[in-house]
Image (cartoon, rainbow, N blue to C red; front, side, top):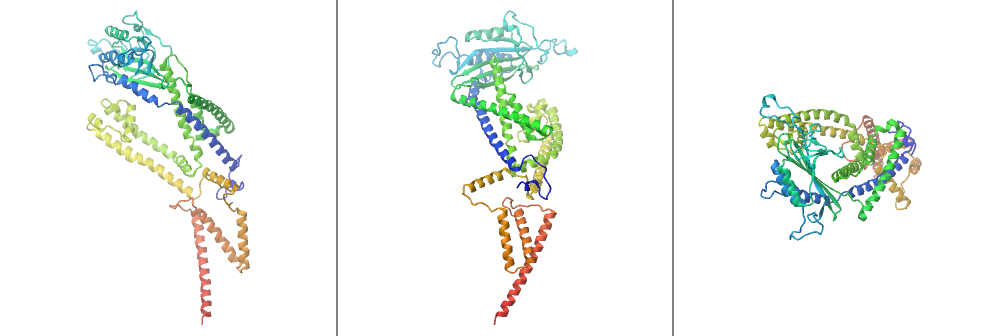
Length: 606
């Protein structure tokens, strides 16, 4: 077995390895079993971080603060705010009513605690909400000289350089004074800008009436000015029934073009981790995960030290390093601000999601020993150069169309409002999700031309070229496998062989005859033929025919080879031709024998 494994088909010697095939198979199976344990532990850990109630809590809170209309104006809610007047109506209406729940629906007092708020009677408001705005300075942009007589003030879009840090309005109160941020991270990424911490801040009171008076006071004294670029409304809730915190941020951006653009963030997170028995099971999985992390890190360090630069030539080694780096990035630093804490917790969950994704992808490393999966990996590795060349051509055309769409439709169609949006809009067009009516309305001539030509070149030509590259390469790989060019071993076969050996040891299956027994039986048949009067030429010819027959049947009539078209090499055609010639000789010899027998029979008849 060991000697046979040193040779490829055709007698070419393999390079010497430090371990035999059996050791490699055993090591692979052990590594696969260990990795499955790691994967199951990681799945328990990741799904333990997610609670189905998170979605419902976010849905309830978003419905309350986003969809509730202003009293007397059913068309105005937070999503539809477009002016400063609408903003103050929302603050004094839906926001105020949504934050302060101090009585049961029968108007009876709900709690004994003074000025407490239980939103929907189940979610306690933690602390008090905070409102924060960022402003830009005047003259941060330049007015054209011919128009300076009409407008002498200019407020540019928000940047950290343009930010206004000076006190304004009623400077005696804190909401009119700039508050320096305690930390510079994380910044908020909005629709029209990226905003840092700090700004002009005021906190609401625990009393509903005091808060309403505060809103009226700020509105009358113009707390929102022309330089205002964004206002954040932050508050946090806790629901003890499901042990979840809900951190809410409502954002109103004031772009330089005028108007208001609203956005929002709802983070439902589990910050109190170890409360129930199931939480302690998750804790044990976390400890196990740390142990696995240490073991895998040690293994990869040993491989790097042993193989050096050759280690980085394997895709699977890069994937293992990526898994280790992603795992080591996970960290849940705690901040006094609940928003910061929710941000880092969400960041932790995102890293965990990426980890479990690559952990599942790594299974391909083990199942690649299967014939079908090996064909898939061989197809991708063999056509990678063609795909790279195709990708260059594809993205040249794709980005050309994206730039065309952005320049022609960007000012009128939301999907093409930015170059990035145009790129994603074109991917959606390929998938069948598009707004042809909007494109046609934006430009009745170039719109249909752009759409039809893009569909023709990208969908009908380029995508079919891509599929043709994959299909042709897969056909070549399948042809190679059909004539015996396959991996040295397949994991499925080895598992089946181990299973059969176990059945034989338990005497549940008859052991298969080995080659020595088969050769002994073959020798007995030769001796029997000699005793029956066959000459040596006939015996040698029969042995040669038997060898050809066994070899050809093993190659072309194996149960593992499907009955489909298989290309034949020149050497195989020669073997088939010689086999057919020998069969013709045998048939001629049998025909002569039959003629002799028939003549003898005819002479014996009276």
